[in-house]
Structures are given as structure tokens and as C-alpha cells.
Length: 282
Image (cartoon, rainbow, N blue to C red; front, top):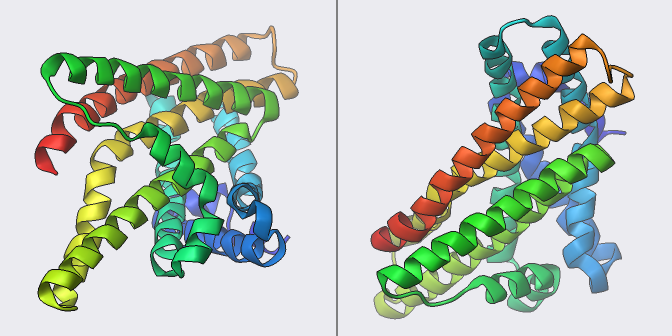
């Protein structure tokens, strides 16, 4: 596979920022092929194709991280090593978000609507007005529990399907891309009407504001999903390699449990930021 040959876990750990380009490429190719070949089902096919492109890298990463668990004795050393994989996976995700945002923003409205139809419906179902402290606490509980549900799906999908967590993360990248793209479209239209197609700086301001708005709480949230996916993936690879029942497997379970606790903590912080911090800033 051509895309598979572009990188591997070792090159990705050495130069994690290059995964930004890979993520952008995976998502862009998936978007073009979806519109071209599967126009009626483009929203979901795009996510599947982008996921397929990342499977070789993701699976190789799970195998490498599982081997680290076997070789390293210190839990702190294992977590430090895992952080390298999480870093380049996050850059891969960020590249996908940028690509999805770009395509949603620059494509004609009817084509963008067809390509991101399901994502737009998802966002419409999540949007709601919240006022008052009690209502905000209820929203915090709802968001945190919903994120925990996604976290569980990441673990289960990663454990059962191996690369299942990658699909959920790619789906989230497409939803965030639509949300950010819609914010850009709306605010650019506002600036255009008030300033008369104004200054390029205004457009850059809107784009920057859009990414800042969603990534303030999105960074810890997505990192949590990657950590959870890594946790399930490591256990899955260990079972495939017949480590089940050995002392090595006990170390892997301990490491996976630590990763899960870190993921839950990140989701708690992300929910607080999303409910109480982001609305105050934007």
C-alpha cells in the first residue's frame, strides 16, 4: 500500500510533527474519493477510508508499545515511552482535523453539506443553550458521562477490533472539523457584511479563533481517547501474542490500568474546560 510506506512507528516517534502532514493527506484523499465514488454515502465512507489509511501505522504502534511493556521494568519509564506514541498520534489527528475543516470551509455549500451530512446532524443534536449554574452542572455531568461512554467505546473497539479506536478518533476529527468549519463560515460571513469583504487579517482572526475555541477543551479530550485506545490496543496485542496468564501480562494489565486512570482524569479536566471556561472566553 502506498500510504503505508510513508511512515512507521519509529520514524513517527523521531519526527512526530510530520504526522500532521500524514493526517492531512489521509483525510484529504478520503474526502476526494468519497465524493467521487460514493457520493450518496460520502459522510461515513470518508471516515472509513481515512481510518483504513492509518491502520498500518496504528497497528505497528500497538505492537511496539506492547513490546516496551515487556522489556521495561519501571512504570514511569513505560508511561514516558507511551507518551511518544501518543504525541505523534495526536499530530495525526490534528492533521485530519485541519483537512476536514479546510474542505468544509472551501467547498461549495451543497457539496460540503453532502460530504459532511451525518457530522452536521450530530452537531445539531448536541447544540443546546445552557444558562444558570445548576444547568451548567447538569451539562457538565452529561458531557463527562458521554465522554466516558466514548472512552469505553475506544477501549472496546481497540480490544475487539484492534484498530477500532482509530475509527472513533477519525470520526471525532470529522465532527470537530465540521464544527470549526461552520464557525469559520458563519463569522467570515459576518465580517464580510460589516467590513465589506474586508481584510485578510479578519479572515485569519476568525480561523485562529475557531481552532482555539475547540482545541482548548479538545486537546485533553482527544488525548484521553488516544490513551484509552492505546490501553485497549496493548492488551489486545498481548493476547494475540499469547502473553495471557504470564508475568508479562500482569505488567501489561497494570500499565493499561494506569493509562485508563490518566484518560479518565483528562476527560474530567476537558469537561470542566468545555462547560465553564470556553463559554466565558467565547
